[in-house]
Amino acid sequence: MCRKVIEISAQMWYNDCMVRFNERMPRERARGMNAVVLAFVGDAVWSLYVREGLVFSADYKTGMLQKLASARVSAKGQAALAEGMLEKLTEEEREIFLRGRNAKKPTKSKSASVAEYNISTGFEAVIGFLYLVGDYARIDELFAGEML
Image (cartoon, rainbow, N blue to C red):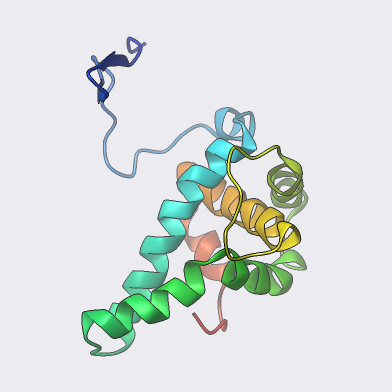
């Protein structure tokens, strides 16, 4: 087991617990994680997923890429996408979504309503869970045919 994170001068040093890129977490462990932690991971994964999709789909300049990505990774954009995703969720994914949506969050959104922000947190929790367990195909499946 790895040792704990050591905080030194506002920098985090990880002692003997580096993970490999795309390392998979056991499903039970990921399921037991705090939903806001899953959303933390899901936020980063979703941002990369959207950015990668934009880069592969068209030859835009970075300013346009940023504008398009921002609309899709915002709480409002995620909440809109979540509506179409909800009916496709498995029972396990729906439970994670609800935990994320209902979780007490440490921050508030500046540009989205409380409802949109809560839905986006549930959305991110599902994405984070699927990423951590290595189910990348399921992420693609959930958004097949969606305009990213």
